[in-house]
Image 1: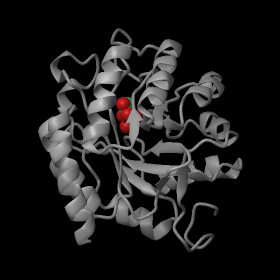
Image 2 (image 1 turned 120 degrees about the vertical axis):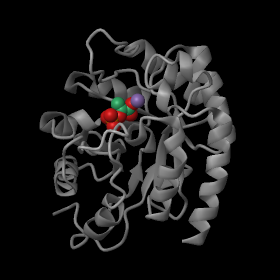
Image 3 (image 1 turned 90 degrees about the vertical axis):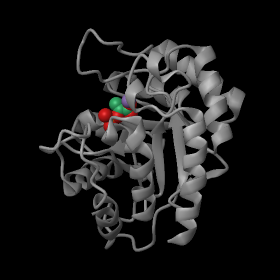
Length: 265
Ligand code: PEP
Ligand code: MN
């Protein structure tokens, strides 16, 4: 299989734009709000996370919310905001694509296309992003095994797009102290089975901002190639996932500590 270590021995390095690489030595930080809410706020948060040491700006325009009455994201207007802020701050971006019909548009406005946990086995969507040559951030499903995650990556690669970055974001277990259970072992398991880079999303695993730092440290110690972290300047006013969003100053301290861990391993 294309995804396997047997097929390719060396680690794959995924280029993002001209200057950034995922899966090379450096731990890459993706950060930003859960959802794009308005342009001024995205600039404000973007400037803060860049200053903190993040390299990629995250922000959802199409949000997979549990309730149909919850904020669904700004859609196309959000994508346009994301692309303007990206140029202004000179930061590449990642945003989720939920629908096959939007793949072309999202690819036009963002640098990395995210396949969310809930769509990990939306095979039609996987094939469609496989036809692009964009880097794909593929998140592990809420109730999927590592092998299933790798088979979903295979769907993308089989269409010719080998630029896949995997993401462990926590899985459903009986434990309810956290939003999901962060499966730290998925990181070394993926490293053994596959040459693809894997990052971790401690925010959606934790569900609470004060658990984000310890989970981030664990992920980097386990060999993660990067982290995707939700950050907000006014978490209590966030339209989505405020409870798990870090204030910029907490992100700054965290990134400094992560650099020490990365040096130690
Ligand atoms: C997100 O990144 O905001 C998100 C919805 O993530 P997940 O698909 O992992 O739940
Ligand atoms: Mn979120």
